[in-house]
Amino acid sequence: MKRIYLLATLVLAIAVSAPAQFVMPSDSVLRRWAAQMLMVGFKGNSIDAQSDAARYVRDLHVGAIVLFDVDLTGDATLGSRNITSREQLQRLTSDLQRLADEPLLIALDQEGGKVARLKPQYGYEPIVSAQYLGQLDNADSTRHYGRLMARQLGGSGVNVDLAPVLDLYNPDCPAIGKLHRSYGDSRAVVKHARITIDELHKQHVLCTAKHFPGHGNAMSDSHWGFVDVTSTWKPQELEPYKKLIKKHKLDLVMTAHIFNRNIDPDYPATLSRKTIYGLLRRQLGYDGVVVTDDMYMEGIIKQYSIENALVLAINAGADLLCVGNNINTGFEPDRPFKLVDIIVKAVKQGRIPVGRLQESYNRLQRLKKKL
Image (tube, rainbow, N blue to C red; front, side, top):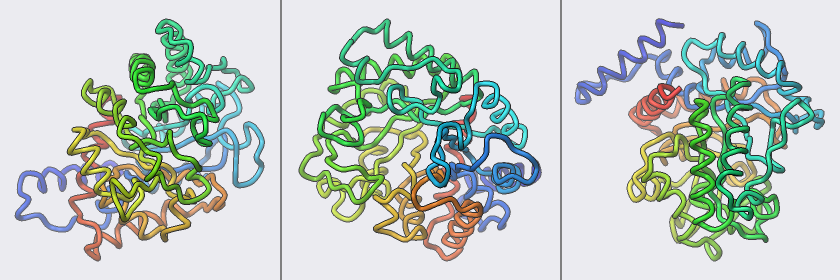
C-alpha cells in the first residue's frame, strides 16, 4: 500500500515537472487517484477485517468517510448506523485511521439544532441552531457553542465538519429556513460562520461551507427532486463565500444540486463547470477542495445516470464526491468499488482528462496537510 502511495506521488511529480512528456499512469495509480475523490458511508458502528469500512479504507483507499447516526436504508432509528456513544465513536474513528495508509478525512454533519449527528442520546451536549445564534447575534454565545462543537468533533476523532451553512435565511425554504439552518442575512452569516470556523480550526477540525452557490431561496429540496432557483436566487447569496474566501477561512466548499439558468442554462451547480470553475474559482478566487452534496440525491440521480453525473461533476471541477450510501436509493456494499471503475474507465476513454484527477489529488493532499 505504501508503494502505491509513493508511486502515485512520483507520477504526480513527473507530470508537474514535465507535462509535455506525460504518460498515462498505471491502473493502480489511476485507481488511487479516483478512490481519493470519494467520500463514502458504510453500515456499522464497529469494524473488523471483513467489514465494508475496512474494504473501503484499507483495500480501495478512499479519501474520506462520512458518518451518520440514523440509517435511512434500513433500521431508521437513533444510533443504528455509525454512532451510539462518545466512546464508541472514538474507537471507530481511531480504527478507521489505523486502516488508512495516509491521513483519512472523517466527516459528519454537525450544524446544531435539527441537523446534528452528535446528539445528547449519545452523550454529547446539545448545540443550538444557526438561526438561534443569528437572531441572538452575540459573538460570545456563538463562540461558546462553536468551541463546544469543535471539542465534540475533535475529541471524537472527526476531522471534517460538514458545516457551517452559508445559505441566507428565507423562512419558506424547506431545506434551510424551515429547519433553522441559516444564521440570517449576509452580515449575520459572515459574522457567525467566521467565529464558528475559527473555533473548529483551533481543534484541528476542517470546515465545509455549504451549499454553493446558495440554497437559501430554493422553494423545494434537492433530496427529493429537481430544484430550479432561476427566479428566486439572488446575487447576495454569494457574499458570504466572497468575504470568507478573501479571508482564507474555507477548507472545503460543498455544491448544491440546484439549477440556475442565469448561471448555467444546461446543468445544476454540482455538474456545472460554469458554476465551479467560472464562478467559484475564477470570479471568487477559491482554490480549495470542492465537495459535492450526495451524488445519489434525487436532484441528480433522477436526471442523470451515475456514470454521466460522475463525469460531469469531475470535469466541472469537483474534487471530492459524496456517496453516503445512506439515502432512499438503498445501500450497495460494492458501490464505491463500482464508482472507481467508472471513473477510471472514463479517464481511459478520454471522457475525463487524467489531469483533472491529478489536480484533485493534489488539492486533497494539500488539505490533509492542514491536519
